[in-house]
Length: 285
Ligand SMILES: C[S@@+](CC[C@H](N)C(=O)[O-])C[C@H]1O[C@@H](n2cnc3c(N)ncnc32)[C@H](O)[C@@H]1O
Image (cartoon, rainbow, N blue to C red; front, side):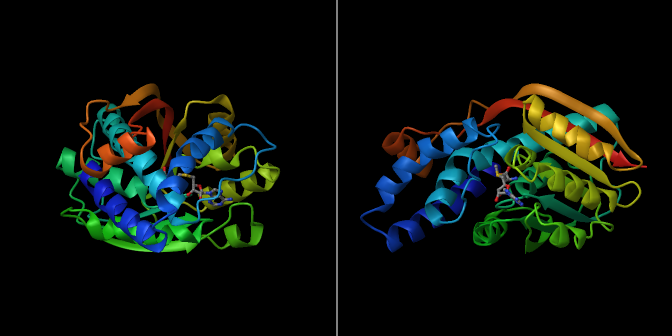
């Protein structure tokens, strides 16, 4: 499900991008892959500029290189959490899920794959909200939802939110959510100059989670990232950490073909399907 959905979205982004700029598309993509990689290498540098995800070039590059891997990680972490807690993770057939810094609905894809693989969660519908600074992610997120083949119905809502903005964050209400997700998001914001506001904004949002709601954190394995998560969680009363995973996770055995192979051959970048991550699963008691 994951790789096929990413392929369909990438094909659509690629065809609209190359139609809009037939002569420049290939060279723009060719330079965006190494730039993005460099930007991720510099995430812990407080002097770096925020990463700009607007524009089809960046979105296609991100889809090709990172989305399948992040979705696979989400699915794998949920399976590990499930094995460790020893019971289904969701109590309701209609779930409400919010993803902060959710980008193009990457974690939704991992969640749908998890529900499909375990088979007994009983989830029939997901109301999925993305809160993200980059409004340009709404279209790829909608493409993802219309491309995914799943028995679970999905209702997508995209809300633009900048976690540095105190007033915007004070209006985010996650009190009816079953699950809140922070996937590869803390790494993007934890060293920004406004990190104190971000800490209290994220802490404030998470404090509004209702009793028995869960929080899933996944990010690259770096002390700055997970210690910031711990500080956010420390601001939330009655939030208990149930599971922590620190491991190299992923799938390296997926065969590249079609557009993935074309991109690999033309730009030298394949899908990044594994990485060292830290994941945490919390429950509001
Ligand atoms: C590495 S991407 C992760 C996206 C998605 N969770 C995934 O794993 O594919 C980081 C996301 O954080 C968002 N972001 C960065 N700064 C933000 C901010 N100040 N407020 C809200 N979202 C932000 C970006 O737009 C981007 O979608």
